[in-house]
Length: 215
Ligand code: B12
Image 1 (cartoon, rainbow, N blue to C red):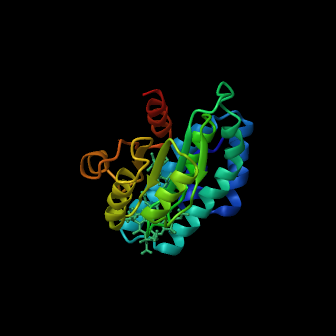
Image 2: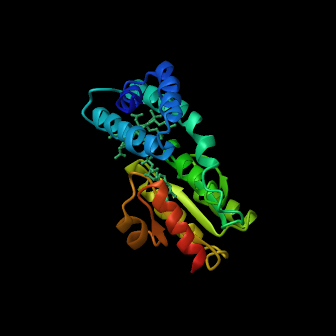
Image 3: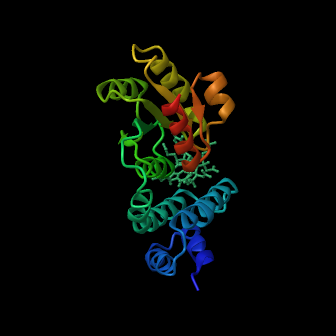
């Protein structure tokens, strides 16, 4: 039987050598890759965050957990990307990055993966992205949607500055802006910063981006 709890514990404890075998075994037994990510790996990262907050672990352990999650995702990514074959025509162009000062990329990369497998053309512009760089890329690529990720509360001013830079630019009427990441609440993103939407996870990000394209 697939050891799903073992997958969660391998991420929590940063056991990089174990994760590949555990994830591969679960996939071979037919466990849904999306469930492995959402119900076990993301849950593991929440536990890692709580342990860090409680000072039970420190940055090196958090880093090992992140690397372990990334190794596990390496097995699952191709399976997710092949998942939604009903999407043959391009759904829209999305530029996405993590805001200035923030290097967290796991959640953003999951959003990228889900959007790509749902037919969107996605340009991942990386981490530590300035407001100006978001605007420049959105213009250059004639984007329909700009997404920004923020995991640090110290990034709040950069979320606001980035939304404002986009909304004050000459492409404001052509783009929709969506925010996400553990540090950003829907109220902050939409009411305080003026974004068009907020998504709490990768699946809702896809749904909201689809709604944007339909409107
Ligand atoms: C792994 C991790 C790290 C890794 C990051 C590795 C990497 N490559 O990303 C490392 C060790 C490098 C790290 C460093 C730091 N971290 Co850190 N880290 C985490 C941890 C444990 C998990 C984050 C994660 O990957 N979660 C899993 C993913 C799947 O979830 P997610 O990111 O939330 O993404 C989902 C949604 O939010 C949403 N989403 C995400 N992005 C987007 C974007 C859009 C457009 C949309 C629509 C949706 C969306 O969809 C995603 C998928 O469902 C969190 C704890 C937590 N609970 O978040 C702390 C956490 C974010 N880190 C924290 C801190 C303090 C730091 C450091 C400052 C520590 C230090 N003293 O050095 C540094 C900062 C470095 C920097 N400048 O960025 C704090 C932040 C506290 C705060 N209130 O600001 C947290 C909350 C831990 C804690 N509880 O204290 N960290």
